[in-house]
Image 1 (tube, helix red, strand yellow):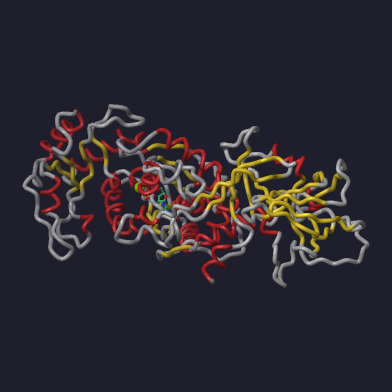
Image 2 (image 1 turned 30 degrees about the horizontal axis):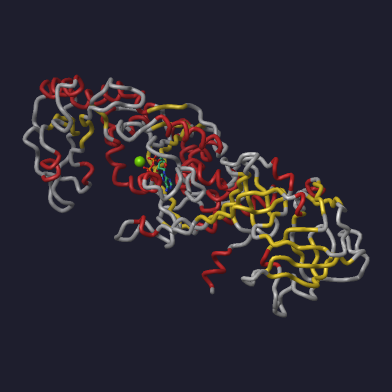
Length: 556
Ligand code: ATP
Ligand code: MG
């Protein structure tokens, strides 16, 4: 899956060193640790490709670990969607694990710290604790509970677990160093009281470990060798190492890389959830969302997302990736695999006045010229009346317009050259019909007329066409970096990001199009069947245009 012809990223360099020196016995065990509080997005895809990719490359394995220590925000629906998405991306985890399965073990780790005199129960309020933390240049002030005896701490902690206290009444803190320049080392909270129902442990627990007291320990329990996370965890690393050292558990190591940021989107589950809850989108899988499920519904292939993650590489510094790179990747992939079909999105009627009324000819069209033998072919019925694209006719064509206008000739894709003779308008001045004549002897593949025309246009035979709703998408935000400004990011939502075309005409065999398969509607882009499609009402999503229309728009 990984291309071997690129240079190593910095994590691979570390791993190769570790393998050479025999650290971790030469093993490579990674994990992907989502919190099940939302659907995965393209940033998670990056982390998935990295973690699973490392294990694949070095013959190791990757666990899927649900980091479920926040009972209030987590749901089983999210667990299921995450599993589906990881598999769909093409990865297989070694074990499916839950931090909540370690709650007993984590509790015993906390007891061990207390016994070593390295943790204490603090009755201070969260405001008092914050007030005593000091500043990066001034040391913190010890809480008056800091010197409780081991026995008292053990008893109080046990009572915390037994449900004797209310939320916030007490916390367990590690006893480290109130003068540390690293604020995370100033007696961090490691357990808090939360009387809340947990999606897996139910009401068994009313105390829950904090991230820093769960993540590294879970890594150690699973003997994770390389625990890869994003840059904001750099200041947590000394604490990660401290707990592992004090608890004398498996020496997992944390490494940090730059999170993926992309233009024209927000990339945090919290913000994505707001878009869903406030109705800016139809759901987590709205095709405009850069969630894995949204991208899939939009028609992105797993291969194109993996390729994107491979191309952006693994950086040590934050940057922002242009969404057009993702679009480029899906275009490249679909160009190789998508069947070509004709669809008219903004139809006007074209009448071939010299074509016999009831005649139907069947032309052959290649499914995909990029494939061997054109990927096979399909039959395309042709008749006297066709739908063509409104923009392919001009009443007063300019000299550079190589499509239809009175006196001009074009080729109808896979069919004849035609010549435009006349047109009809309604009272409002709209073109309603274009009249042309077939130039006989110009059938595609059998043309010996010697005529050469500059334009080729697509069409669909009127009596044979199927009707479909087509949904065209634009970027969900109007600005490049909606999450960065002062104001509410939702103010930057592009209210015109969805355009619905109710009555497009497509080739008849698109009635059997399949969800998850990509189709190229010639000249119009790549499309896929939407999950809301029914045999009575076909619905297609445009995955991406054929060229980068946005880049062109910006240059104007
Ligand atoms: P969010 O802020 O979107 O909720 P998170 O980091 O809280 O993201 P988790 O479910 O905790 O989400 O993340 C699971 C894994 O995915 C973590 O290892 C995290 O570092 C990684 N990850 C999350 N967002 C990104 C991103 N934008 N780029 C790369 N990795 C990411
Ligand atoms: Mg998180």
